[in-house]
Length: 288
Image (cartoon, rainbow, N blue to C red; front, top):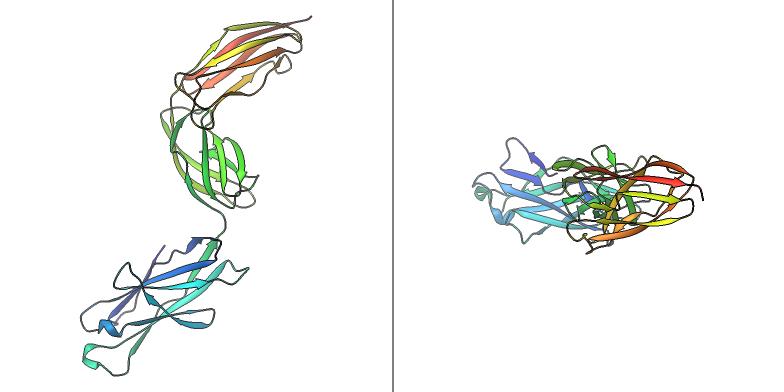
């Protein structure tokens, strides 16, 4: 966030336009920018000469192409450093004192922190339950989990610059706070995410299996699955009786068929959660 620095009784306002925290980059060169703006017509604009004091050295700043009162300095941070402390000095003369001794104005001490862990953006800001969505940034680890408010998602670590998550089975038609949480390296705000409604059909409506026998179960969604596929949340109250793989509708497909194998004899259900609610399929497993 830029810090406005105003010295009472002076004819110049210094505004630091450099954020307190900037994302790390491979070159480790960072642009420090400030505005040096006369507050009245007494200063000779051509006499304004800003410098930056950083690492105990004074450097001249150069005029930026983005504004007449904006000056900048390209700072190469030393290896291993994650922050820099600096301040500005600006010399100027008044129109009445042209050619005389210039006035010097000093800013307050400023700090710039280099963030090695941050979020750039989420690939999407709305999707139905089960959709796979990527989050781009830097400094991600395998311990990161994406949350919808307080609900954790199934999170996939793709690289230090990319995570993906599956939209959890939360209520549709609502907007949730999206964040990346990590108890060691800290939490990151991603933004907000709206969950849209979707429903699906499951057939057959009931499964009767012998122990070790398999039967196909088909899931159908109303429109093609997005890139990354659509994960369907499946739970059961008889986990020892049912053996089945993860249910993922492939990208651009509207259905997927998975085998369900009978385990230990028992009676129960498979439960499926979508944005439209919860449905179930009765399961009976008998001995061979």
